[in-house]
Length: 270
Image (cartoon, rainbow, N blue to C red; front, top):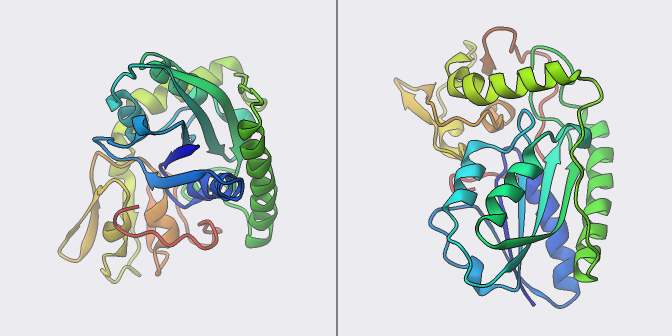
């Protein structure tokens, strides 16, 4: 069986989950092609199975992921796919799975499996907890996630069907849930890029601009400037060698744990 795997990632979580699945698929003798999402997509409809993995941002998928899914052409015959999402708390996936499912079904994709997998939080600029975990805590979460990913991959190959069920986050009231979701979707994500700033420790190395997955950072006079395509993926914050990036309005990062998936070394094209 030929399997195409696509991901978007900020600090490596979604890529690690799909790589864990790829390991099982390959060990079972299936041919896999793993790559980041890109437009236009040319290889998907030449496969027997497609797998997507995206992060959850404020109860939804990132705009870049939504736009990617909407760009896929409709299949002439039904195409089987699975959807895996990564989140700091699997109970806080919100509408993310529903959004993916709704878009894909319109394009004649059959969702045979969907699940949310807990991975370490990377939102270092959050003004209040939960914050990124320590390295030791992150290692435990990742180990559990890899075991879950391996089981999911085996289940998919063995024909086990599973669909993540929507639920309201336990620490939110319904009013707070909808309020935060709508505020971020229609106001926050449009403007939060404006709140990025740098401490005086920034040396203008340009790493943040080079590795930004949405090319949303420009270097002006050896200082980074963010633009409106920023997805708040936190790659720039967590990979800055000087720990010099923060966000105003309570998004200080001094003294906070930084997080990126072990072994993840982003380049300008991933």
